[in-house]
Amino acid sequence: MTEHRARVGETTQVEETAQLTSGRVAQRRRTRKAIVDASMTLLNRGIEPSVNDIAAAADVSRRTVYLHFPTLDQLMLDATVGVLSAKTDAALTNIHSHDPRLRIAELVRAMGADIIELLPMGRRLVKLTVDPPTEDAPGRGHRRVHWIEWALEPLRDRMSQRQFDDLVSSIALVVGWEAFIVLIDVRGLEPDAAVDVCARTAMTLVDAALRSLENS
Image (cartoon, rainbow, N blue to C red; front, side):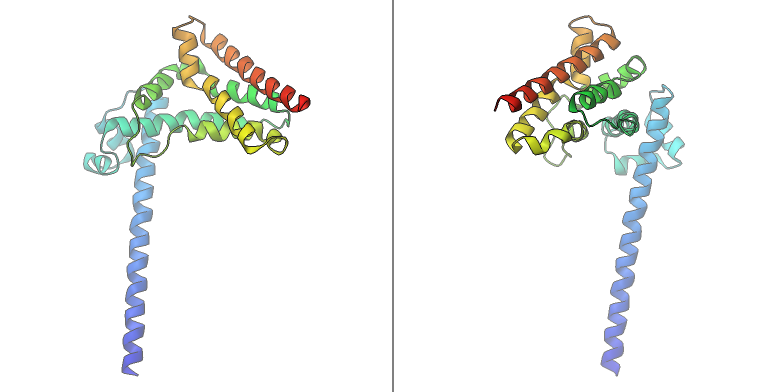
């Protein structure tokens, strides 16, 4: 009986420890989200936030901000990606066509929506991601790849995996802030014209893929 009680006591202690650990992890996630959300809110207001601004908006200390984000650039990257991605995600929910040409064009236009207002954020995103990522950093660009794969999903069953991956890679070259900024800065296009060129180029790549399928 004594041994049984001891085992029950040990089990209860393990469960309590696990619950406590789980609670701490959940709290850290909530705190991190609060910091990123506060940063996104400030960016949406056109504010170039400092750590003090973010800490005040998130109702945490400067030390807490730095515990989750060792550098302000890292925090700004997460917040910038969050702002830009949220707008695109929301726009894609209104696209119901199964035509890959229309889907890819609408994707580009969704990514370029409000481009004049969001161009400073797009430049920030490129600036913060131009250096090679460190080994422990999360892979970047996964949202863009996911969106392109979503747009091309109607073609997946008609193509080999290699063909599908190559088409995704080709379109990734002409879709996104890097392409927008090249067309604006190097070619001197107006922002809306840059988005239109990217959309037409992406559609041309889809057309080429469709012709290849028809001729095979």
